[in-house]
Image 1: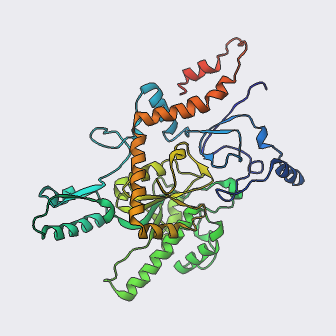
Image 2: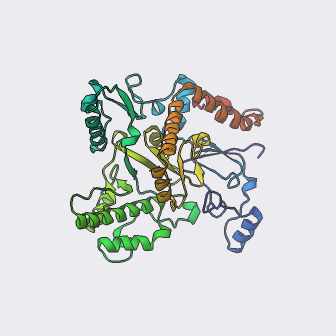
Length: 425
């Protein structure tokens, strides 16, 4: 046709995995089109040349490597409020609630930043009401102990101390058991596992040994949950050996959430629990996640997590960000080791990055502060003006301007008139 543009929405572009293969890593090389075409023909598979595609407006997660689909133009996802927030900016000329801090000024704000500092040494701060929200008493216990020492000193004046120093030094993740970039391994990443899918004996040890045997095929989320299971078992053995006075906790606490589970999935988790596999936990609100020093996000079907990154950057802890082959529209402004600590696709360096942060607290806190500052910037009109200009004027504009509409058939509407009627940004 004289003019063609494709719209794509969902987790990621809906393309044939044989025609558009994804590399196994973020920096992986792609086969040349002619090589891929020759290989597909020899296998009797579909043939396509990704360089021949028309412009694709992708309202989903995009690909870091532009060579995967050269004509792909990535925009905010259609769902989960991202695209709607641009509508709020365009027609309401304000920042949407999803990117505003929940506060007395913005009571409908959805982002939780919490208290990044607590003042000690004053009468007002001596009571527990001044302490940050904390679901298990970890911060409360740590700061209260600091207050006891502080009160014993004479001539002291009020002092604001960072909550960072009292956060739990543990990697925390809660989320769903969901697929991960199916085109990378043509559906072979294992998720939605049942105990009978795991080889070995139906015991706690057999469960972990079976998961280790399946390690290379596990989704990133299942790898993290497996680590967490192993750490819990080792800790239980240490406590049994040393008694109750042994105080410690695993370096990682990763669990599937029980939020929005169906009856079948609930039964599935129950079977794991019967075998001693603690793979599930209650849904954790951001006010409860506040206590952890290290957060991580694991990519889903499109390779990213549409809500996790911004919510975790706002917290006082630091984000160990899962760098996959995919990205979302605002990731272009995020810089590794400035706003987050990068973690590889296969998670093989997750423990190493945690240990680096533990031994480089000054640098880790600076990264945390920069990530939080970025999220506060996302709550300003300046940010949305800049992103609207970048995405909908500079990137979408050339495709629209290339459209030279001729005469309309009876009953037809022009593209621009239809877009205005649909309140397209």
